[in-house]
Length: 273
Image (cartoon, rainbow, N blue to C red; front, side):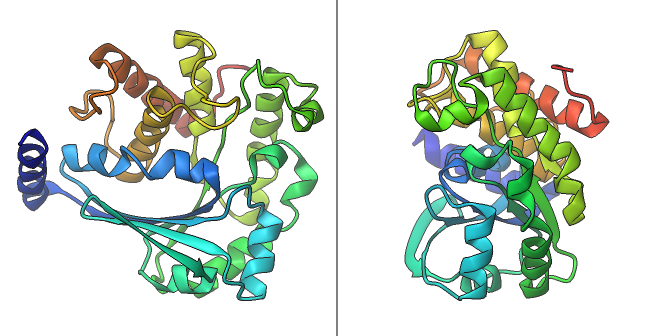
């Protein structure tokens, strides 16, 4: 009953002032963490409606996305959220996903392990160009999803690329966002990684469920809050939606730090420097 009332109120608000925004994430499990839960509901609570797509392959890098696009490979799980309902279609090409909707915004991101390595971004300009050529909306905007550093406690040989140092990994990610992403003519950044960093100051290093993916509660909710403010242009701090698995005080904190991350990104200022 409560969910029905929430959806009716959201629909009523949408008829008055809301936007309909179609966003596609070309990503991996980190875009799954960011967009497949809470994001639709956050936007609906403020009167906006999102059509959300996620072109999903676990651990997929920029190089792999470009290779899949060139080869029209049926490797993607296409997750789509319309009206708050999520569907999934398997063995789909990236071409088919891009052509499925006149997307307003398409986001790109690097595989988490490579996210702080400048040389791994060499294919980004070509990928950005090819995606934009395929998009059916002539006004489509290509944005970048800034992902997060691993937990300090994460024990994995891959983390040794960054000296198993969370701060070093975050610094390297930020440097790539500053120096490599603009080479692909991308200027809009969704600063999820910075929002997670700020939340770690407030809640400790507790936002991951396995050392690198986000926790199902405040980790994913913080990411969704960051995306919601970036996509809709409305300040997320004060949003009345949060899942029952999150305490109100924690939800408010997630909203505040997501807003702070977006504010810093808009000013091109980062707290750790």
